[in-house]
Image 1 (tube, rainbow, N blue to C red):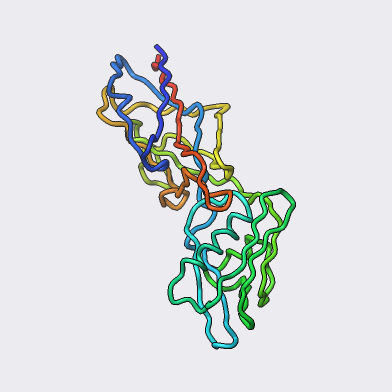
Image 2: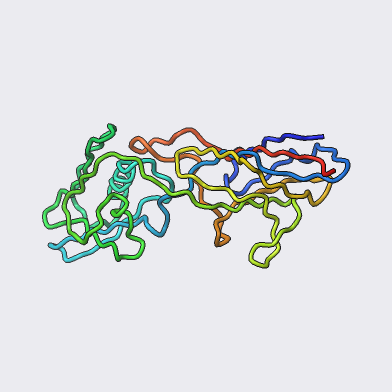
Length: 254
């Protein structure tokens, strides 16, 4: 007899969560399971590897690095807004005057962030480790700029493979190592993402009874995928929480 189950991460980490939905199942015989579809929040597009920007004061002969919070930012202007908040919140800043921020909500319109002090500039240097933030805003050549001006556009993110593991399937081999791989999921970079498997891969259940079903999603290097269930957008506001939702199909092996 076929069983269809829907599992959600609820308020847990959308890349690492558990469910007791399998506990109520009374399975007789051998079964196998596959992921039919998955909703998931977006993976971070701003991480510790690209969340820094640098400001230089020529008058004070000082350079200072700033950071914005890691997470998923829907549009270019959302990153610029986060940079502005970082400057306002920073203590012991080399900036003594409040920067000027003009935020645009319209597609194709410009937003800007201006440093109020003379001889103070944003430093654009693509070779600086962790300083890829301005490159995301299309500043790719070395420069010193007192004002950043960008058009509003959505930040494109290429699909990445996510390895979805579950503790209730039998071991399989990945690079000569045993693991309980349930599915390989193409992680998309939109605000909330849906993927349906055309030819789902079935895995044999490791037992007929379970107390908890545990799910973990990692990248190809084994690191837990960082997902943002509440992407920041619209000048600092947060969207509605978006959990991971998985639809499973259990079928008896005959």
